[in-house]
Image 1 (cartoon, helix red, strand yellow):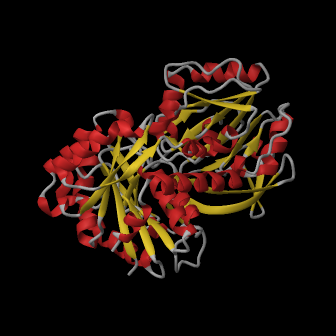
Image 2 (cartoon, helix red, strand yellow):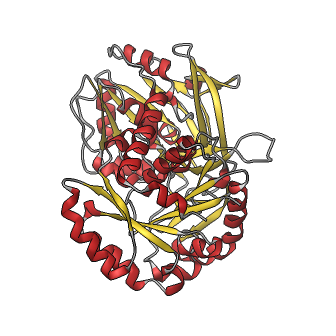
Length: 491
């Protein structure tokens, strides 16, 4: 079995995902065969990964974070890197994905009981990820201080104690109270869990690090834990795909540029990292529009992203008045792209006769495409290579969706995937729908599309930009953390 180390946070959104990715890249640069692992993730930003041993078709779902971390390791993503993925559908319930496949649905309280059934799958995947590896870097979820959930835990100390993986605790100084959060975690953890922690690090520090010297001494006094270092605010992290929709609150507005792209922040927004390649373009401003605010009238393009609850988000779309904004945008000659659930919303109607998404089984669409969608139980999950019909250029991405879409506008497909037409285009060519995520990741297509909107010079090498960002994060961690000590404590 490979040696392993685990990063757990004093809370959510403390930066564990980026730190694990950076440490994975640092270990790779040292010549180690390194793999990422996250026992349980909660995100509607999913990726398609291989299911080892499944030679049929398609793939399975994992969190985008583990897809990024696999990229940092220089290996193909596997469903075993994230054996349990929760995809929130309502405020109290989520779809449960186990080893890449839909396991069922559960309300929050019911899931606490279900977790007892999932530890075997987690440990099975853990064994598989470690095969042939020198080092596995594990990411926790939430915080081990949630002792009210400890009895059925599979994400933090429940996993660490079962797999005997030492833990480095991550504190986020940017949100304040970091001394209390680290010391408080030490205070409330049971002894069995506390002894798994080999030390801590402080993340997202701004300013003079020496000002925290007394903070380190105070934490050592309260906990006895060693400090592995203080990580500054990592500017390169902004160039990496974002995993969790919590970051959208920080992406509401951007620097004014030649093309403004408006993206409504759907309640169950999914795979919004589809917009990352556009955000990386120097002449493009991507604005995520929160509920309660209108779509900006000066936007040249509106992108309706994926959704984990198409009908529910379509109803909220109207409640926000975005349907009126979108119609006005279209009448001004603006362009619209709908991806996956956003594509479904652009049609005349969305039907869900089996109540797959919930109790509302039918909703009127936005009417910008002459199509209709019927939800079906079987889920399409696959990586795809395709070709743009508009520009006759190669595309590469993935599909994760329910539903089948038909109608006159599908006779004008936006892409051809494996010889089959995909999506739809309006008669004037200004409204485009597709089921393919990753559309903007194709540099040639993105450059030509932006050129068609009057933006010259687009088409940066986005994949290379992400690779450089991973290198930059790894270099910062090597500078500010005792990576040798962290890797040496892996067991």
